[in-house]
Length: 216
Image (cartoon, rainbow, N blue to C red; front, side, top):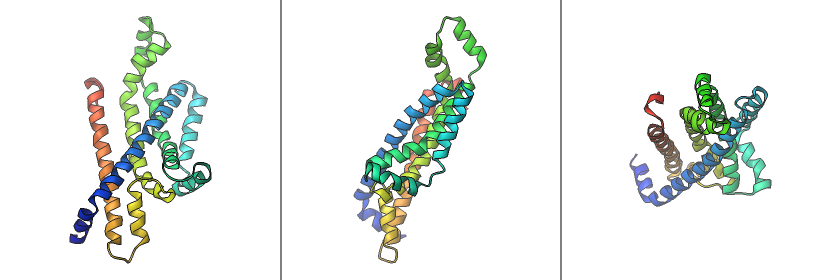
């Protein structure tokens, strides 16, 4: 334990930099996935065939092993940030798309009929009524996707991606040498701490952006 604390103290700057890169790449991917996933949900929630296709397609992405997907992206996108972001976006789509569809479908028809009766057109109903009411469910999907991609982002070190995965892979590649276990453990615990911080962030966002009557 003392050696681990000593290792973290000596490499605090590197760990901080890698943690920041990890957070940025996950945040970037989640932002892109949220735009795509919400758009897919909005476009398909009231069309059964399209809705099924959207959920099935994004679900299929999750069956692709992360090592395989990252490897397949190397010839197309090279190494580094780009294949990492693309892979994380692919893995993040299902919870966001599915929750957007579920959230929109759960809005009461009576509420929509009342909005229609006040003269609201489809676009105003969507933006002013449906999406705000569906927001807690959508945000839950974003939160799940974030937790999922925080872990997957560590594997992106395989394609020279940024983040704490480099600390983990470097430590594992040096097993048997001094501080190898401490290095891998520091990277792993860093990923766990980052996941908890993201979760706290989304908890705060939910509290701040969800009307009191819609909080669960």
